Length: 360
Image (tube, rainbow, N blue to C red; front, side, top):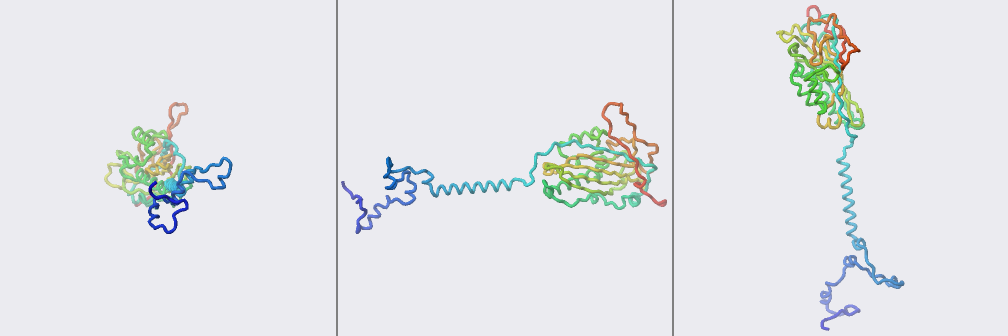
């Protein structure tokens, strides 16, 4: 055969260096050896009976650094997924929110014992228990805010500020007070209460569910006008966690209005009308996110007002010089069928009325 061969003892000494270059392409480096599919047994291993000359190497054994790289990638991916999960997961998650319940209300007229005093709005306010009350929205103050077990501080603040906004729009907005559009109040309600709200204005009934005056304060513009744009306000807001899915805010406020007959030119014969309104609001997480609330319950005491007045659609103040002598709440017949009304009546304390000096 022609050509040079490899002597079994290796390349003899003295061979020119060019020989190394000739066989450089067939030299097996360490990575090539580790990647081999077969591995030769040692001499001692081949001495055993039925011993084979070679053994097959497992793919992971051949992989070496590749296996370590795969494990490292998997570890990094797992750590990244855990970090994303912990970052996205809200720290105050709770069970699904409960169904929205219908609002329940009671509107109780307070009848005066004598004539309703009249005069200038400023004099009436200064000579009444409302003399020290704040004006307008300044009287609806927010308490200190703390987080609860299931709701963050910012969520509690959102509930309180939304409740305040509802009070301002439903009890202080002149357009709403004078029987105008109530859309600004409606926009704050949870969507599940909109049908009840709409029905309360389309067909108001004093049945504890569908009284428009359970949702807000308003007067019939054909009977009553505002004698002064300012309203005196005093009250409190408190927030508690009702359960893991619901925050509850309780608002207890007294609103004092100066009112008069709609066709009187001056304000000499104004009178005061007082509304004590206690409202419980509820908020689930969707409400907090969407800037909505649920009105759970509304209890209203309003006077001076005749017991026989139908206050489901409008509050009906007794104005300056009027009285409710001989007025008594309508009788209730337990033998009649049908839905009972929720109306009650109380007596307005003389201390609640303005005490004007003879010169006033």
